[in-house]
Length: 432
Ligand code: UDX
Image (cartoon, rainbow, N blue to C red; front, side, top):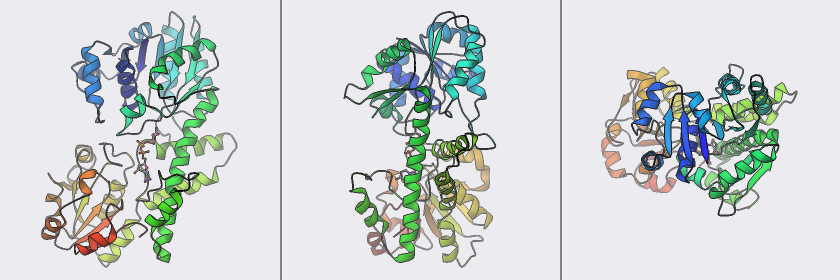
C-alpha cells in the first residue's frame, strides 16, 4: 500500500520504517531539511534498538523514502499518518497547533480520497477538530482515523511489528477496511485489531498510560511505606503480582517514572478531564507522588553526609529515563543531579547512550566518564538511576577499590541487599 508519514520524530520514524518492512511503499515527510538530508543519506536520527537495520534494508529496497515536500507526500499516500508533536502546554494540556496546522494544509492539497490517520497522542475530541480543519479547504472526500501507538522506547520496533493490540477509531467503512488491510500482517498471531469510535480510541491511549503510571506510583508508595514498617517491597511485589488480576509487570518501585509519554499524558488526561468538567483526583495524586518520588533518595543521601555534600564526589550510573534509550526527558537522574548540584556536590556521570544529550543540557556543570568504573575513582558515593544491564553484575571488588567510601544509593533495586552488603558495601535502595 502507499503510505505517507508526516513527521519523522520517534513515532513517525518507527511507524514509517516498520510499515515499509512489510512491503508498503512509504514516503516520510518532515519540515527539517537537515534531518531529511541525513535520513536520505541513510542515517537514523534517533537511537532505538534494531531500527537501524530495518531502516537501512528498506531504504535500499526503495520502500522507504524521505522528503520535505508535504504535497508530494499527500500525492503519494493513500493513507496519511500524522505523527506530529503534541507538546505540553503551559496548563498541562496537549498543544495541537502542529496537528491542526498540517490538517489545514492537507485540506488545501489533497486531490483524491485519503485516509488521514492520527498517530499522535491527542485529547479526546481531537479527531473532530482534525476533521473540521481539513474540511475547511478540502474539495474531495476523506476520512479521519484515530490510531494511537503503544510503543515503548527501547522496544518500539518489536512493539510495532508484534503488537498486543491495534486500536482503530473510525466510522467510515472504507477507512476501516483499508486500516484492517494495512495492519493484518502485524497480527498474524491472532492479537486483535480493535475497531471503535474515534473518541474511545483517543481515550484508550491516555487511559492506558495513566493507568500504568498509577500502577507504578502505587508501588512506589507501597515501597516508601515498606521502609517505615520494615517490610521488603520485593516480597510484597511478588506476593501481589502473582494474582493474575494484578499481574507482575509495572510493579517495580524506583525513583519515579519519566520519559516523553507518562508525565505528559497523565497531565494531559487530567487537564482534559477539567476541560470536560471532570476532576481526576487519582491523577492529582499520581502527579504529586511521582514528583516527590524522583527525589526520594535525596534525604537518604543528605542524612548519610550529615547534610553536608559540599565538595563530595558523587558518581551517577544511568542518566536516561530508562534503559535502552538515550532519552533524558523527565529523567529522574536529572532531578537528582540538579538537587545535588544545589548542595554543591561534584558529579561525575556515566550512561551508555545518554551522555551526549545530558552534555548538551548541562554543559560542564557535571563531568562525564568513559566507563562505569572510571566514574567511581575517589567517589564518596554511587547513585544508580537507570537499570542498564551492564550495571547489573558489576565487579564489586573493583568498585570498592576505586571508591573513597563504599556506599551505593540504588534507585532501581538492581541487587540483592544481602549480596551487596556481603561485598562490604553500605547499600541503600527503595522499599527494602
Ligand atoms: C510508555 C508506554 O509503555 C507505551 O505503551 C507508550 O506508548 C509510551 O509510554 P515508555 O515511556 O517508552 O513507554 O517506557 P516504559 O517502559 O513504559 O516506562 C515508563 C517509565 O516507567 C520509565 O520511567 C520506567 O522507569 C518507569 N517504570 C516502568 C517503573 O518505574 N516501574 C515499572 O515497573 C515500569
